[in-house]
Image (tube, one colour):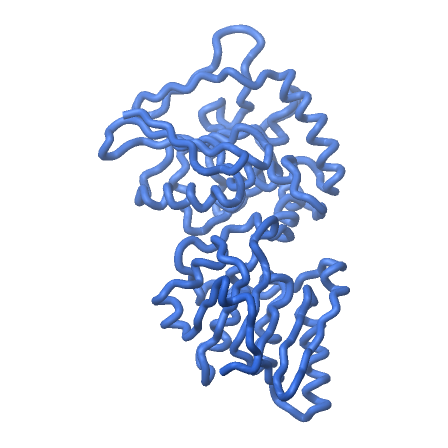
Length: 378
């Protein structure tokens, strides 16, 4: 057999190739599309029950090819052993006068927008991180550049099972041009090219690049992820309000920082001589971002309704960690927790799992009934 399937990669590419024995086919992955594509790729890999990919080819750094590959490499459920080799030209492969095997360096960095170069740097950093690096360009001279030479035969590689791949692009002209572009974009991102710690620092700051929930969320594991507060200045300036009427109340958190809310709520509880803030609903801060809903904040509240407003675009909210903290903190309360989503998306639908809802004592509501909440209702 020899098949090629175009996975749903939005405007990008992600190709799944199988060949050989139909009962135990060998597989090749070429690119990983956007973040949404990562879920499809992960499912394919896990369905092989440990059978490795012959090669994962990352053709280039455009986000519609590489963006989904970042969470794929970072996903702890995808073992490194499933990759026999990963083909990718990173920063250190772009200059014929320098060694091509990258070496870690120190440093930090930040950027405002995910660019192809930033994704490429993070992808390369993940290839090198412990425990033990991924195989990287092993078929090309122990990690050397994947490039068509100016003279002589075209390079080719025959994979186990008989699939031959012959290289047609790029040449050194194209890689040198990319090197100049890479320098410019890395400078825009306050990022030193080829710097592993810079890249991993950016990775830690970027919602949407990290792995997400596939299937029913692992609530216990997600709830135990250490809380790291949002630090973005615009979010910190957010107006947050406690709205109260006729004995009912709702906390409207905007995108406010959790520590700021904790401090103000503690002051309010002292003024009112109360132990917890009784709420009919909490509009969760920053669309359910994991950096804005802390366990400490949740423990200040007596609340069963949590409202999450987002369609998941761009930043892929809500984060599983935030929702897991909510249901875990309220599991033993007198009433079932309610999650109200104003969009039905791939990031909210997994929380409708019947067994999960029963185990963690919560309900999940979706449009149209979830968009209008009667705060006076039972």
